[in-house]
Image 1 (tube, rainbow, N blue to C red):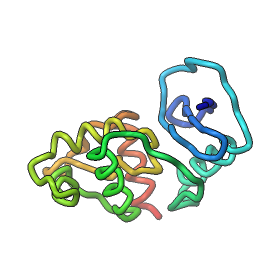
Image 2: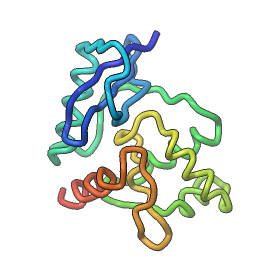
Image 3: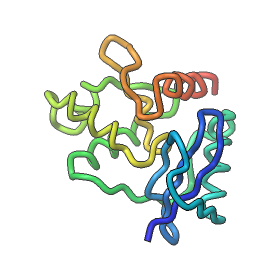
Image 4: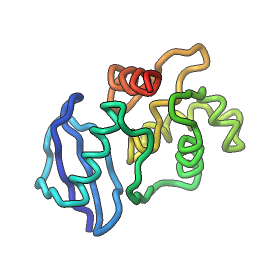
Length: 151
């Protein structure tokens, strides 16, 4: 059974979904939309997110599980290979997963990424360098990229 915990952070509210020992959801949300079931696991995850936002952490050391289609999982695995502080275009990610014409599908997979920040969909940009689409909002995407550039 998935439980959800909510935390205030600089971009609003962070929703963390978890099972007994794995994170299955981590996204900014507009409002608390259910029971707030904080735990030692969700607290530890939130602390790592805060450390990342403060530029004190470049990776995460908690277990997570991704639920999605095979294509989505391939895209998310590709995102995890983008080094901290670097970006890739949607086209480059599409090529990396063996579907060079699937730029829009890569964008949709990014949008459906259930564990943002950890699976770094914010590192994917338009071919012209523009910051296109991000589930947490363009301001958050820009801020995350700026944090990574400073470290």
